Length: 401
Image (cartoon, rainbow, N blue to C red; front, side):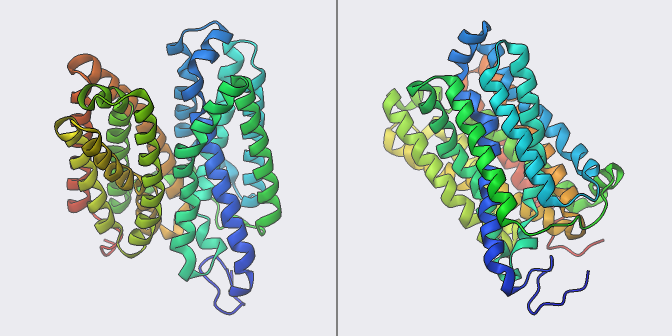
């Protein structure tokens, strides 16, 4: 498509349309916040959900696992199915699916209906995340792409800090069904914001499943996906068990754990924006720093986390590092395949969500077999492996073979 406006960017963005583009970026950030909050919402509500639906907490936890697995599978499959549909229309439709999923979960009279609701949430999440990840380049001028991408991914970081605790708090004030209703209404509000603020976004090219999979032939894409798998698996293996580690190693009280995790989350938001700026200049250098910091802090927490102060410092560094994983790895993949941004995003979302599920599995096996401290060492080891892959693998800064 010819660019007819002065200072138009890669997606046809001009300075004249920049204001609307920034509003669109904010709406897309709201969408990423909403999908991640929807995915993680059951975490703080497992006990009341299990009691109401007559299942154990372990079974209720499948509400989270199912959504993650559906998101991992649907992301690469939805991209070809979206065909030539306008991406604004598709985003709004997916947010409608997310709205229905959350409201259905709120109504669910039994666990079978809850599972169906969570499948809808997984479809909405996988699709929204895939499209949203590559939209910044189409909405703002080139000089603003880095900060806009960071803002879009800040929705993920902020959801981990505010979204899940807020849902849990609503559940305590009212009930767990009210929490799902609230997030469902939020999804509807975001749908309206997307419809109003986004310009028409015609599909840039038709995407086929074979084309998505063929991206894996690019060594830079393979390296990026490998780093995503290692970092996210290691993080979720360790972070799932951070509370018992803090209790056993640091002797932290329940009230202080909440404070420490909030500090961790705030550091994660800051890390997201810092890494976004760094990755725009050099994805490899940024991920080398992130991988090294994660490897050190996660592995050393059982060793040097004997006091609240040192544990808090380690958690801040952990938060800063992991907060930059999403935006840095996404920047790596989009830079590796600029001509196929949606396909690269689909692979990214699939691997990312698969790694979440794998991390929980690996962490559980390590905790049962060798104790929670061993989980931290496993997590640190996987981050160290990511460091090696980042250093030795092909990056978008290398010339295309």
